[in-house]
Amino acid sequence: MRKFFFLLAALMVTTRVMSENPMSFTVNGPEERYNQIKVVNHTSYSNFECRVFALNEDDSLGELYGIYNLKGYDDTDSKVRWVDRNTKLGIQFPDELPGEVEFLVEYKDYPLYDLIVIYFVDKK
Image (cartoon, rainbow, N blue to C red):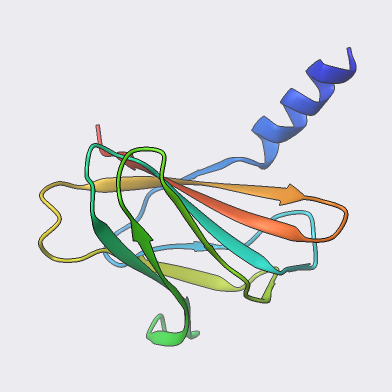
């Protein structure tokens, strides 16, 4: 029963996010502040980088939160960054990426840090 509860809780905090270019989402996890961003490549593309940045109120580019390099399927990259809840984040991919990408966002709470995980998947 306990495993079922944790699985259900994980599914509830996982948010499927799709948007126009640049892709964006608002941090709405249960914590007031997160201190790490991790990206995971679950696409068919390899050897590319993406940028994660804060968006200003007018959706213009704000502070850069990191350039993430992804080599292949299931590769990850992470950066230590302080991100408050309700911060709007944007994601940019290189123009030469051959197809479209969607993303899923998950929030994880660990004893010493709180994590925003962004999973990239091929657009269906």
